[in-house]
Amino acid sequence: MTLVDARPKRAKYDKGHIPGAVSIPARQFDKFKDRLPKDKKALLVFYCGGYT
Image (cartoon, rainbow, N blue to C red):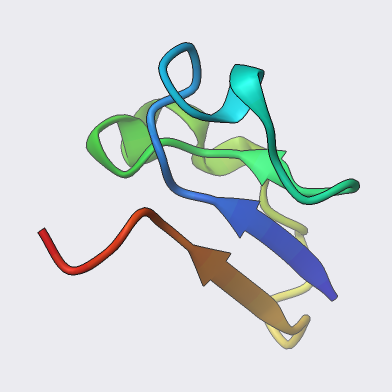
């Protein structure tokens, strides 16, 4: 399983995140999508700061 923190890196991730989570900010997904596992069947769990 890959745990992905989709919150802004500097403003949120750097201040605290779930241990082992990979930072892929939602607004920069295309830039950092290479951090996702190559296995397309791997389980991905994303979390963010809320609905808005």
